[in-house]
Length: 85
Image (cartoon, rainbow, N blue to C red; front, top):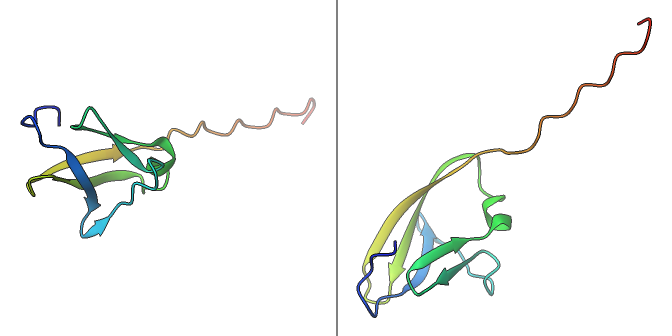
């Protein structure tokens, strides 16, 4: 989303019809006027898989993009076998 015309900035972000609140930048922010930064803590609230976002610009145009979330939690280690068992 770095190819926006000069003067256009991202004003709102949605999943479907639900607006994602910026929450003072805790969920997402805009860098350089045209790059969305999704915060790690917010991404952790999403289901594993693909999510489609829609960004609304100051001129009312929208851009749709997809993000794939995967589970990166390390697998639990198996307990060590006890000697003689």
